[in-house]
Amino acid sequence: MGSCFTENLGTRLKNDGFDVDINPFGVLYNPISIANSLNLIANPISFSEKNLVFDNELYHSFLHHGSFSSDNSSATLDSMNTGLFQAHIFFKEVRYIFITLGTAWVYRHVQTQEIVSNCHKFPSKFFEYYRLSVDEIVKAYQPLIANLQSQNQNVKIIFTVSPIRHWKDGAHENQLSKSTLLLSIEQIQSNHSDVYYYPAYELLMDDLRDYRFYESDLLHLNSLAIDYIFEHFSNSMISSKTSEILKQYRALQNDVLHRPFNPNTAKHLAFIERTNANIINFTKKYPEVILHFNRP
Image (cartoon, rainbow, N blue to C red; front, side, top):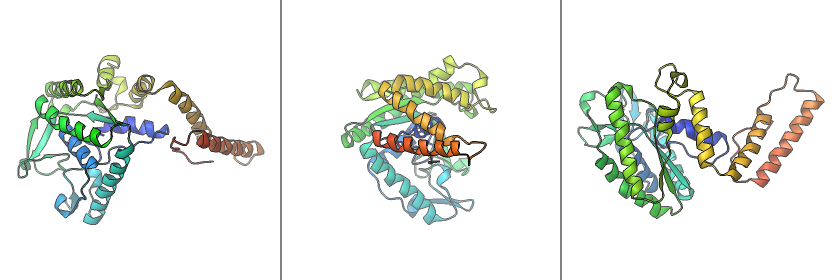
């Protein structure tokens, strides 16, 4: 859960056959919105009309990313509730929760005094914009982690800080924001034995200090950077046994994605038959792996 860096890493894991749920509230950036979402996943309550706001011909939720917004209130609520309750069921069995914090800057709704996940382009006068303190972040996560671990004793929590810069705040303010997140995680980690930190931010800032690892906007990571981080992530956090299974999975995936010049030849038909047999054998041997490709 968290910023778009979560989407990059989570999608790689999903494509490699891991059973993952990625951002059931959509992309979230600040620590409080992520904490609020996790509390709702652990203790779900159905969303209703009172959770919606209407603007510019669309229904929105201040708890969700704009990808949930639509011109139909029922469809918006159905999407929100489906994501919530599927995530709740998933959470009961999950072994790891990855939380990527993007920024310590938040928008607090003036009328409700609640921190929103997304402003949905409402006028700025509706919000107060400020930077969270370390104490505010730690205070939000202490009861959250206790709540999560009381309901799922096997869960481990791994924090990362997104290496993507929030440049609109300014270079200095972006650094202060990232520093606030790093200090908060350090304090949270010191209070919990099953809370860890993965240094994605440091890998980008220190190892990949070159704009060739960024998209044309010079803010978001390109595929080269994501490949580098995912390789480091795999080597440091995926067991040797799982890595061996992953090699077999990727070999199958390559066979499935193969597109021949002459698909009707006897040689290719035999290849398809062999690939299907390999898929059947693989799923019998590793039923826990989620296949994210179609058979030929």
